[in-house]
Length: 293
Image 1 (tube, rainbow, N blue to C red):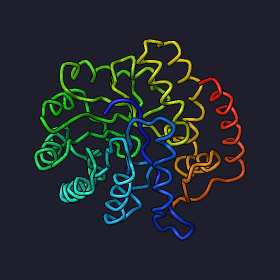
Image 2 (image 1 turned 90 degrees about the vertical axis):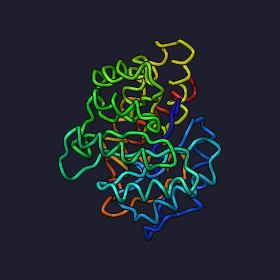
Image 3 (image 1 turned 90 degrees about the horizontal axis):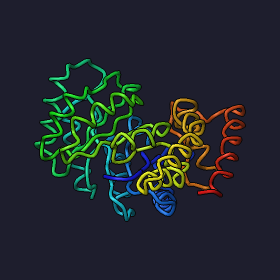
Image 4 (image 1 turned 30 degrees about the horizontal axis):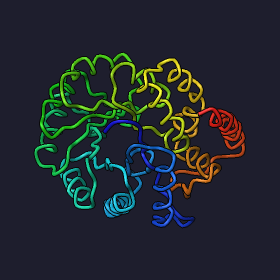
């Protein structure tokens, strides 16, 4: 996977059910704005609030509608659930599987290495590692990643640590391998690309796909200064829809842009009036930026 793609939000209706029609429309909405691939059932998809059957159906709908590659989130705390979800995603038409580090219980790096090797050995599609310490309290270390990168069925990684130094250390270890190292934090997209990253899986690409595409294209064209400027211009919006107001804020901002993001699922709650006002201000700033893209 190269370029930028969203961990696609999952539209739910007012009763909390999966809204398949809105999901199909959303695929078209983000694709029309330049994304290079789609990631259903990621963290911003509220996948942890969905049943296994709902996840499988979500991947199926996205894969059926998409004209770009699909990297489906399939990770769970246990190996059995992950293998079942990865098989289901492959059957549904996904091109690759994004597997989060096992969470809840603490595990050594050696255990994570064994776990990912087992998943990759069994999977019918390439496996991508997913390190998101904010949710799992686990950060894969560069040496473990480098060892796993040598597996013929491990295609890359999404690094959502936000730690550019560790990203650079990892990139140095995998630079000579066929391994896509992607950043998961939109606030450091240009820095990660400059460090040798192949792209990003970004919440920001749900609400401002034009900007993430423009950053990648500027970097790819050698205009690193413009890539840095655009990343800096999006930092506050990126923070608001991730660490600031999380999925409820992201979905609100998307709806304000006309994207069929749907409702959040409990225990998430809609954002309050103050959050809406702040997001409205940031969207106004982005509208001005968008005219310059």
